[in-house]
Image (cartoon, rainbow, N blue to C red; front, side):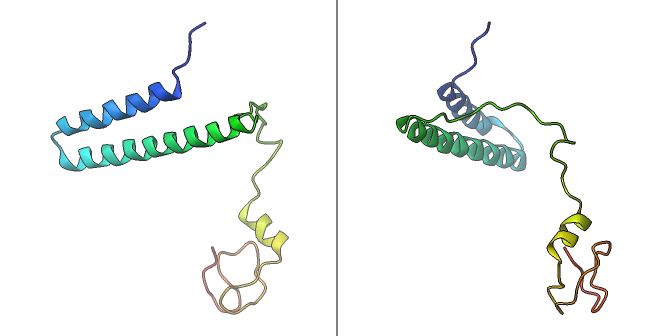
Amino acid sequence: MTSHPSLDEFIRYLQVSLEETNAMPDKVERQQRQWLLEAAFQEALVYQTKRAELEKLGEKAIQIVAASSPSDNPIPTRSQVLAGLGAHCTTCKASLDPELDFCPACGAHQV
């Protein structure tokens, strides 16, 4: 069985990768890669902090759960959400038809 990299190893990888971006000739590509790596680095630090706090409280940071199939928890359609909410137009407050992307009373586009 192979061991998995630790969070510290991942953070070091991100730091090294960030340093390596200085050699990238394309400024736009370099900047985009740096933003991506910096965002990943920040998230890793946030996770590391939260995990340490949870461990102090005696709780697990990650709980493995069985995967559910899409049929177990289907994502509702826009129509189902609007119908369930009894949605009203944000512009004129008329009742919305869940099948339409616009208000039948005033024509305002509905998100």
